[in-house]
Length: 86
Image (cartoon, rainbow, N blue to C red):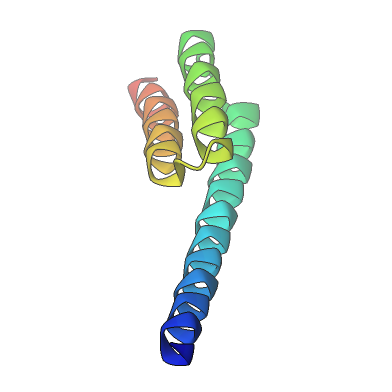
């Protein structure tokens, strides 16, 4: 019984560490996107990226960090493509 409880505690600690790592990744991607938005040239691309940023922040805050990170990545792609098109 004690081993099962200890196992549950280890699993909970591992889950908390994983959540923390994902939260840190969300924060880093948000900072990266904010920097890219400041340097953005295209207003249309900036608008699209800001919408994706809002969506990503919501997803990260609601515990769906993987989806949030994909939204941040998509926003950065939009800005990169707009920069390459100029």
